[in-house]
Length: 349
Image 1 (spheres, rainbow, N blue to C red):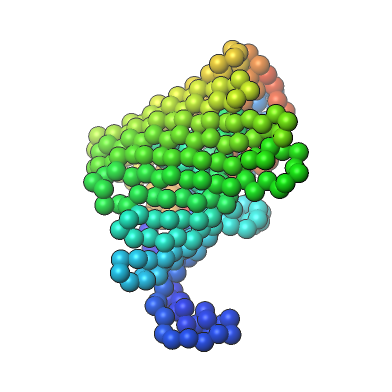
Image 2 (tube, one colour):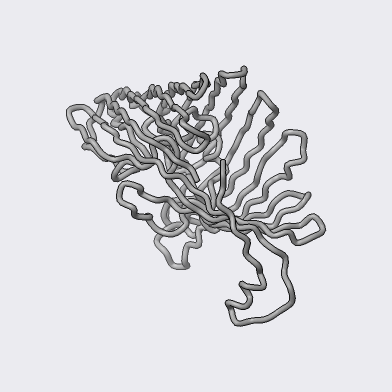
């Protein structure tokens, strides 16, 4: 992927702040992003909606990232990334996708700031639809496990470990004293460990988030395992995820899917099931899609998805790019099936 780059000197940065100093090392800053826009039609029971979708194939976003060589095998880096609603041109607010600063060396990486939660990476990486669009599974935050965490301290293993990778993460909820919420509300700890070679990729993650009130504190715990294996042009994958709440709720999710590359095209398919431990209010989702690459940076795509609800379940076909997501875009209808179809174009820069 071609990137737009420009060099920034720390000497210039110091001068802009009205300070002076000696020559500083050069840093490379990269501007990057994706614009993804399409049209989606979603239905739930007897209700339906047609809307522009701004993340049907890849999350629409833009950002800046850069590194500085500090010498002695040590480097510093930053990453600022924001969502953009391409259908309106509005950015929902700040660099909410990622806002981090890092120190990196042979010992690994120490990263501070807002980042993806450790327990959310497997459902995103081992999904044929990349956790995007109407094809994505409904596994994200089933009972309140976070997708991203703010005020986080993350340690990542170095890359020179023969295929092993992983991270440990702590995030502070910053709950003020005297709040009606639990004193540790939104505190999060998580860890992930995986192994990858040219064909096999397998990973597991665990984490917990504190919730509840000062009188009745609670915890949401997340556990997941994932695997993929590449047989040349076809890559099957699967993940299992469980979220539990100390108040007695539990949801188990299982996804099986695959991608198939044929020339400039890629077929995608996934089937997932979601089971509540305390009731029969379960649901399943089938998703089928095709992506045609017009170049290394531009692609067109189409996706179909069907959600089958049972009992009082009222899950809908949702997307990161549809209006009101993740809130329900249509009236809830218990037991009614939902479906959707979307077509769009994606361009990366």
